Length: 419
Image (cartoon, rainbow, N blue to C red; front, side, top):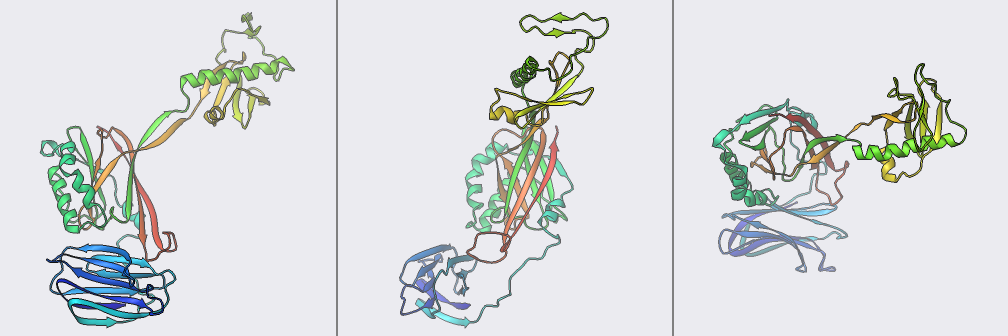
């Protein structure tokens, strides 16, 4: 770890190069703080051959500036204030350090090894992310009334600002400013010191939005993703599908009667006259019990499994005319048939879907408060869930995020909006 501190004049620069090897001039990596004509400047990372790697703007360079460069086995990282840059080390070998100064004076220089097992960490009152989200004991309600500005008007004034300050490179000051403006426009009273996670459904006229307040940060800028979904229930089969598929099921069973009959012939109830249906030569009782289930049928792979209710006898019959989509629709569907082999009842489960709701989030500077603002039409009554997912790096690495280097967890809150 190389630590520099010094003074920069306007237009001056201060920094250092690491992994410098004269035999390989382009191997080294140089990190430099460059000051502009005023108090602004830029943190630059480049190769010693002058090839740019990355940069980060600096908004306030004071009389004294500090720069830290850390060399790891897989990466090189530099830091100046809140600005930080990182580059993969790749196949760069060992090398020397070299100082860089122009219109600047270096007053402090420290070079030390990096502790192998020293890692910064944050303490928490919760055992994990799931416990943090689970501390919410229910969605609260708040009516902002006429004091709240319509959401459409808030978006018109602040929408561009929200998108800008919720980027990782945005300053905490700007983020706090936009959050405060949005909270003020929506007339939201904020908790000063919440003891747990509070989720509040706020409303005004037809507008609805959410306020999240937590004793510990939930960072939607760099760590946490929030999806909000509405539960939609629809019948598994429409009446049109039932009519079309039912005809194929009945036909498959009736066609099986052209050979040896798969089931014992039906018996007419006493006192009921049989009649023949035109066109198919079938008889029907047409009297009491005509809607009673005598057989059940369900699709098993490519066959119909038909069961006689009274005896439990089963037959497997071929069914034709079904597409792959039809077979999918008949999954877990059972039909009841009467003695005339007519479908008298369908047993169809509902299809439950979770439909994502478009939204934007604006949080305050320390990520302990956030406004969740829906887009488009106002939120309808119904069942909703907020699904949270956190991805928090344990340490800097060029490897993809995974359980070996990242804290990963998920949690959700399910709630109803009524009235």
